[in-house]
Length: 399
Image 1 (cartoon, helix red, strand yellow):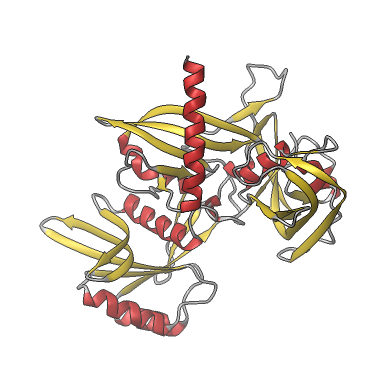
Image 2: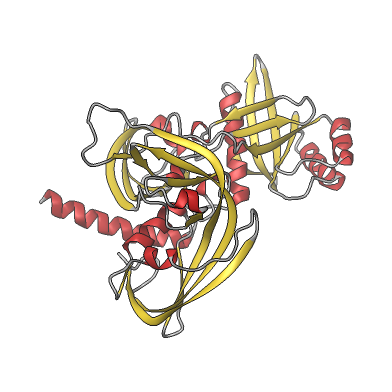
């Protein structure tokens, strides 16, 4: 299978045309375009408490008496009721004593029975001392990039090679990590001065690069792969400007992200990343792979691992007429109807292996918490147009 277009790796791997690439931990759950990293982390923590606290009512981003809490957990044990509040910080610096003091005050004002503070960067010793005095549980959230793998529960699409024996099951292996140049963003500059960013979510990026045709018969993918990037260093980011001479017309598969025009240059942001080579007799979308979430108690040192697809990251119940998304790979859904305990879903935007997929299906409503609501107005506007086009196409096919 072809390599993803955004990837440049060492010559040993680049020479192998039957491989693709997956990155570990560069984009947490592929959510950078839909929700912020902070919201995604908060939803992960909420999901962890939902699956580990039997019978608990877990809410995300709840406001109580005018005070906002990232995660709230309510449960009963016998005749007793418990109220737990959780603070989640997505930071690069360790939590300080002042952070802990502020959280303790906020939690005490609501008479919380238990207080939990979670961060990605850890805690200063002073913050740990404050937490111990006030019985605050401390946790860190990390992603185990050494265990890259496919979701164990989610359904994924695999493509076998043409002519492959039908009685041989799909085989997909993840190799050792290697240094690669990851194109994290690409901006198209037109001859009239307009600039458009190619969607930087990997599955979207690959689709539009493969399907955008240039005036000389090449694809945008072909053009990008010919840009002479400089030396690659792990963690180092560089910016490359490539002039298209002579300028070429470009025609995307649709105009949801950028329109047809005349391309004069491409501006790329490139970062050295650790990547894993995927090999096998089947083809699968690289962004399907994921890393386990590690939830570690700072006080006891006990660590628990969770697969992201096992965590309920969405709302308790989906609503008709709303858009939702899933990760690994990125998929956008529309809730078309709810009948009794069944949801009718329309999958209106999903890019896998450089192709676009749509579908309709029904599902038990108990799986609602695994669908994350779309709140970004720009994305909703695009999905509304996708939905209208999907319904028109479906109607023609039915007729």
